[in-house]
Image (cartoon, rainbow, N blue to C red; front, side, top):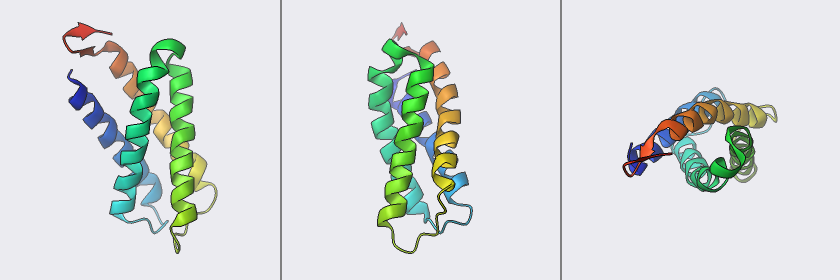
Length: 117
């Protein structure tokens, strides 16, 4: 699977996960959800490229969850009028961790650039 396709899958999964969590009564717009998903995907890919091969799925998934909580927390902090109760932040992290766990499994099986990982 090509790198662009893998990043695209990661982005779609992040949009879906954050869309479900943030789209349910927080007042986050679709643009805010997409921006948060792009940030989580971009930074998360760096995490996956550096941590996943060395530390494994569990550590990389945990780091992705913390990263998602940081992004959502910053969105809640700097977006006035956003109704985001505190439990939404760890729920968003858990949602991202759930999709990232499966994405890491896909990534470990997918050949990138003609070679298997």
